[in-house]
Amino acid sequence: MSDEALRDILAIPGGRGVLTTIKRDGRPQLSVVFHRWDADASTLSISVTDDRAKTRNLRRDPRASYLVMGATPWKYVVAEAEAELDEVTRDPHDAVADDLVALYRALSGEHPDWEEFRAAMVAQQRLVLRLHVTRVYGQA
Image (cartoon, rainbow, N blue to C red):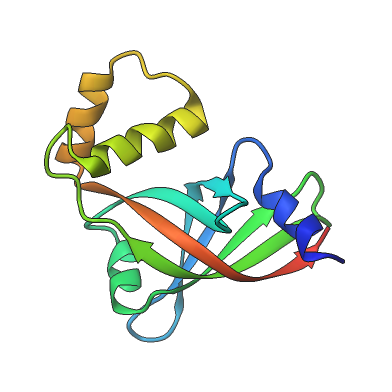
């Protein structure tokens, strides 16, 4: 099966998958997250908080795997990737907050109160995780 067919699964609307990072002891740590797929850049973008295990794990070891299920249990893709972590948003109108707004819009559309959203991103210490996909495998 082609990489293109597998990568198409990453573009399924609703963008939800399982992010796997590596704990300090070598065991996997898994988190269900929402993503946006940029086919041109071969990158998944995910909103994360600075204090979570997945973020700490990726700061220590940027290798990650990401599982997305297709329309049936027999359709899935695993994307192997290298993580890039933005800075934590510190101001409701900094570049990271702008990136978080763009990510929210891509996933959910318009927010009823963007100022409230931006303030929440700062309070939650959010940032954008970008997974640069280097390999895919699965069943399309």
